[in-house]
Length: 169
Image 1: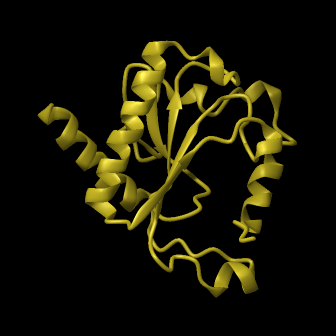
Image 2: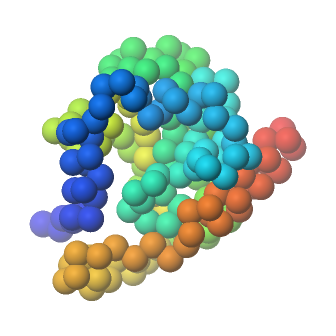
Image 3: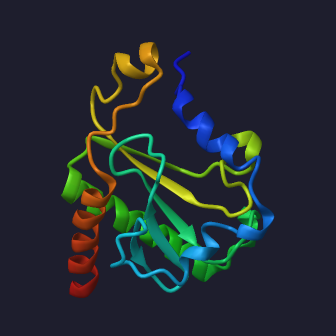
């Protein structure tokens, strides 16, 4: 059996165990944020959801599609929310394909802490670009994951492409 091993994420996941309850949900705080502000990693905002770069990515271009509505109940999404989330996952895949030219994708959600969700009270969907041979000896031997792109450079490229595609519709 092959395993996806990511020990570098343990510090990130552990950070939520000591979370100050007064800070609120990091995803809920994103609704008022401006895409063009480089102090955040949001690349696209829609009516019911937004797309943001993962601060602790598994791979370059790892994005999250996040509903604005705070919920941990996957079955609570309205038809409109379901449709927009799925459309934004498709849009995101198309943009990542054009900008980063990956060979494949991992797409999914971790529902609950036991399933690996670092932020388990606000459902979000991961879309991770993958390239043939993108896993090397570094994570296995050195417990180090190499991300070869700066997040703000990646953000700039993705925001430009989202703007082009969305404006052309």
